[in-house]
Image (tube, rainbow, N blue to C red; front, side):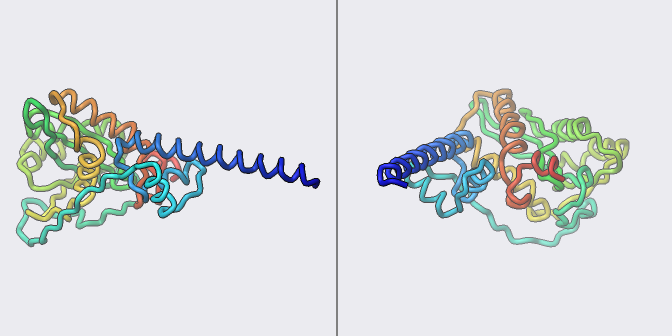
Length: 259
C-alpha cells in the first residue's frame, strides 16, 4: 500500500470510528431518556450490549459521565424478620425461582400520590419471568381492586392448571371475596408472615423499581392519569424492554420468548 493509500485508509477508519462512537452515544442517550433518567451504568451496559455496542459496566459509567447522565438508584429498606402466626400457610416459602409460567404469582397493593390525594395500585407478577401479568389502579384500597388485578392476570395468561397466588395479610387478601374467588377459580392462596416483607420480596422490588424509575418525580392529576402512565411503564417499559439480572439481562417478554 502506498503512503497516500495508507493515509486515506487511516482517515476512513478514524471517520468510521467517530461515526460509530457518535451512534453509540446517541443510542445511550436515547435509552437513558426512555427510562426517564433512571438507568444506571450496570443496566445501561446490558441494554447497549443487546443492541450490539460492546461496552462493559465501567466503560458505560465513563460514557455516562462524559454525557452528563446519572441514574436513579432506589433505596433498599432492611427490616428485621419476625416469626408471627399467620392466617394462611406460607406455601411459597420464598421459593421465588420457578421452572414454568403460570405456576406461582405474587401480588400486593401500593400507594401512588396524585393531586387529588392517594390512589392505589394492585399488581400481579409471574415469578417465572418477573412479568407483570395483572394490574389496576383505584382511589380506594379494597378487595375489589385486588380482585380486578387478579382477574386481568387470569384473562391475559389463561393458566391451564391451579396457580399459587402469594400475598401479604392485608385485609383485601383475607376478605371473603378474595377467598371465594380463589376457591372458584383454581387459585391456591399463600400468605407472608405478618410484618415480614422478605416473604414477598419480588413484589417489593417491582414497586421499588416503579417508584424510583417512573413515578418518583411526577405528581399525577388524578387516579386515571396515574393508571394510564403506570400501564405505559408496565407494557412498554418494564415487561417489554427493562433488563433483569435474574433473567440474565433479558426483559420479561424476551425471557418468555427465548424459553
